[in-house]
Image (cartoon, rainbow, N blue to C red; front, side):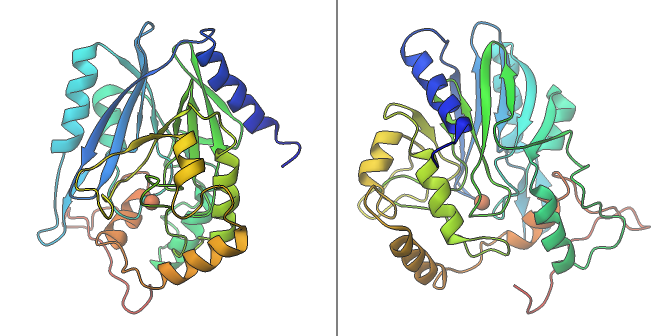
Length: 309
Ligand SMILES: [Fe+2]
């Protein structure tokens, strides 16, 4: 990675916050315990502009019922703070929770954004769910598809998108001022890294993505997509620093080689069960957070492919 101008730019941006030349964004987090997901509202506290990252649409699988209880907490926060939402971001097409992005967009406005490689994910899962031509595989369910190095503004604070594939082909990390939202790449240092065995996942790519993220400065505030507690820790935590990741991440701290990581990850992934909500989550999230088209009785149905995953 000798000529990675994108990460250089992200490094420079974090440093300019530390030097006092760029305002630090405010980050408000929301933790959804049923799916262990952290969602964020990241804002420019002066300009009062904001982005929402990785929201959750509550789904009760046994009954097939949904609710916006969790999303409404985000709506309430945004309104209380008087924020204008410009962006509703996904780090990737999640396999463990449904996204509330379309609901939040309807309530608060903002553009729906995901990584450009979502089209690859749509291709893979379009096949798995045997979708017909009504399921577009061109990312058109989102307002904007973002590539590595693209920048968005949250008020006067720039956001730089980094393509960090491995967990899925489409993962993005978002570096906003000195805050990095790293999605499913690393988790807390005492828990390790995200799995890489979903269709389209790749442990070696994940390793390279993590090493790229670890070039960010020590003091970069690092916000995770999930926390599952860890051995010897009985409370949830979803914020850490890049220094802690580099020195202490149990799976991928400095010194762990790519071959070692791939071997560990592959062995561990073989022991993991599929996430409880993977089948509904993917069907909804590959559609930008929408249920499949209702049938003629007005009801939407989710499929359950037998013996496929
Ligand atoms: Fe994920």
